[in-house]
Image 1 (tube, rainbow, N blue to C red):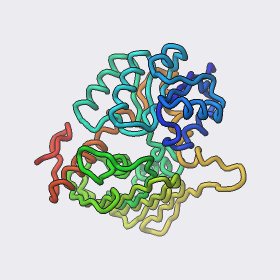
Image 2: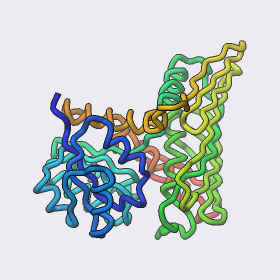
Image 3: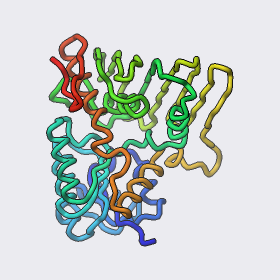
Image 4: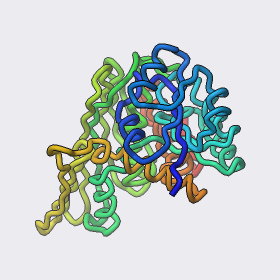
Length: 332
């Protein structure tokens, strides 16, 4: 099978090294990197044995002709431009952060990808870790019965000081990361009441469309690569499912049966596999080869953006916000 040509654009030093580890070891043709900082892009190309380095995205897309572009860390206003440029040049896209926080802009990007016969996929490795995939299968089997509650505690690495025109001090990428875990497992959020703490911390109470309640506590951690997370779900059968750091899953049913997954952190272990980066890239590469829409595309992840916008509105107004309609508009 011919390897897929892959390229990267963004600030490599502010992007998790897991992305480069998986690109270097996943059987792809890691063709090119692009960054407007000449020294930084040269260092990245040398470190990861990338064939070409560029300072301009259009030039890279024309010369390297990647089939898949990874859009990494950079200013939020650059993401839409980079995604659109990739689609125009015939490449599908994986973007490591939400490409836009505007719902209309989000939908326009999704439509543009469909018209181009390409896709835009969110880089959400927590959805693709072996432990998280097992948790999803356990839920699908109905082991917990009707989900009653979900609790998320998250510390997320942050590359740069928070900069948000929506709500100073509120890290929306961290909020999106936390709420995507809720939406991925239990569906859309109906109501949210949020407050913000110091240094971008988020605290929120949720009501989900399916009837469950939830709570989120999330904290960005500038300059610390290691993240930490804990997810707990309780169901009507009396069971409890726990997912820790996206790599350990334990489910205890109401009658005491136990099912679990524990990452094998031994010599030779692959963090990129246990944390979901390999699964994410495998899904993207399969979608490129078969010309299909991948899991975690813009349509599938839209509810997470809707919930994030409602959380932002709630934190700004100091009161709960209802989310109405299938389009996800937040009620005033």
